[in-house]
Length: 117
Image (cartoon, rainbow, N blue to C red; front, side, top):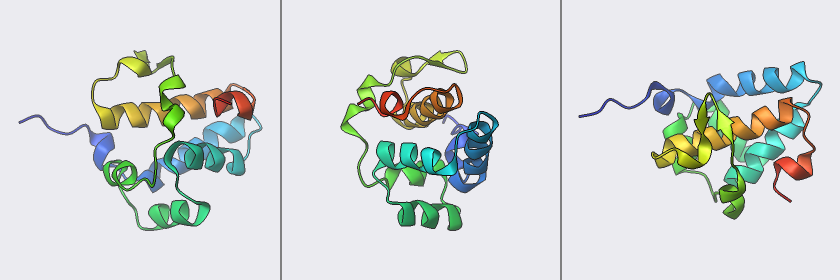
């Protein structure tokens, strides 16, 4: 039986500050990071804070997401040397989508572009 990738059982709340850090280094703010996460997952700000406080892991974070954005298919490109659109595991792909969006924020892309508007 294949062992789950460690990220699946890592708490979302433990990685969230890293997203904030990455964005802040480029002058972006927490509200923008939160907007990306809520756009992708359908969580509200309060729900997002709850999953962080409750130390929900990535597997549960995405399993419990109110609604994955119907435009996730528009998220393409490379994260950590992997094309997000080619990731076979559905959960890993969702994690990579989030990574990609945070990368775009840190690279200075406009929010409308990041949110595929």
